[in-house]
Length: 160
Image 1: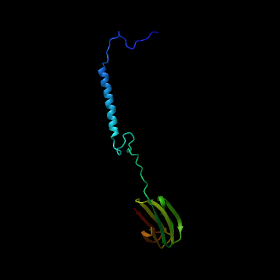
Image 2: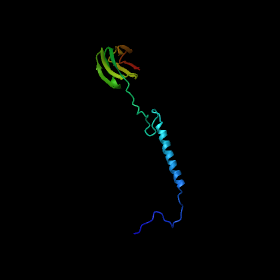
Image 3: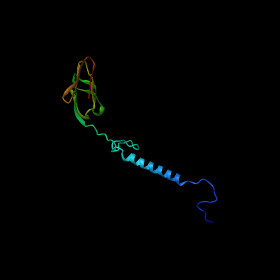
């Protein structure tokens, strides 16, 4: 095996001029310096192009403070069938038969600026009257009275 020369003197072709190489190298340096200057002067609050988050870090939402409410559902009258009421987290509770007066007091937490839905429905067990009432934090927010055979009474309220 022989040694192959780095440049073949017999080969004719295009030669690079040292001026072209210097020009390309100079453009590369300018590009690198320009990018460094642009990124070095980036404000702290500008979003990052790569992550989409502010340069100071990602935004973390703070949970809204909770408020505790006391709710009392109340029925008076001659007896009630099929009592249905809303509990915490919008769950539903049911009773098939209850003597009156009947009541239940519940406590639950809601976001400070959120809304809550309260509802109580019952059917009269006979020919009398049936009265429903919803009391939230000591204030009556809904009250209804029905009369007649098997009448249905419904109290409800959305508070924000």
